[in-house]
Amino acid sequence: MGAIIRLIRRIPATWTIIALLAMALWVVRGMYLQEREERIRVSANQEVLFDRMNKAIQTYKVRDSLNAARVDALNITVSEFKDHFREQTKMIRDMGVKLNRLQSVSTMATETEHNIITTVRDSLVLRDGPESIQRINYADPWLSFSGVIDNKQLTASFQSRDTLIQVIHRVPRKFLFFRYGTKGVRQEVVSKNPYSRITYNELLMFQ
Image (tube, rainbow, N blue to C red; front, side):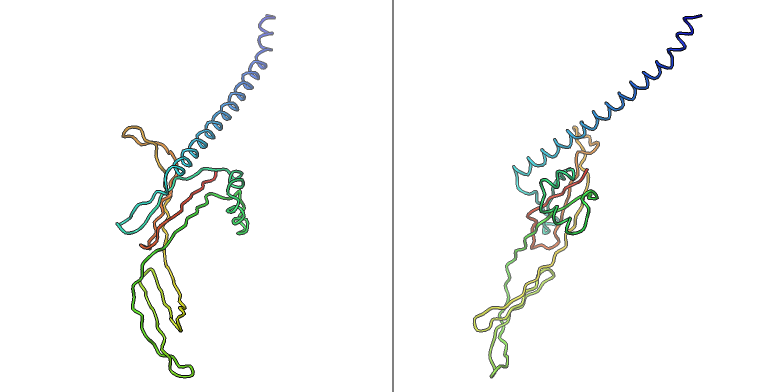
């Protein structure tokens, strides 16, 4: 009888120990998964940065005329962003946006180049008397240029119009012919101005 009583008394303590062990295992498992995700993130970022160091920006053509570029996203923390992207950090703060609310930051640069061939036309202006000046005008859906040559001096204005289309999509992992899960996030940018090319493209995704 005494042995049964002692066993009953031990049961609550036994369940308490089991509960504590279960909680400890749950905490350790969470720490392991968090560390594993961090290792995967750092490894993926290193791969992206290595690719950028060893080859120029990835560009291609859309419809055989429009220039496009792609870039794999860097997954970073707000702390890393503040440490390594100080100019962007200052700009975002100047915009009144809190850093801990950021989801992504995208930076792009384009360059427009086009050879213009047009006719120089003579015009008359009245000053002290009629004088001849030369005018230059050029326009298409993407570029506008107008100028005046007066006494061998050119005064001109130039406008370039562009529309950038940005697509962000996930990149699946590959094994043989199978695709599964998500390897990373990629940004595709298309410039609709056929005279423009994308010279820089960067996408930062925040944890």
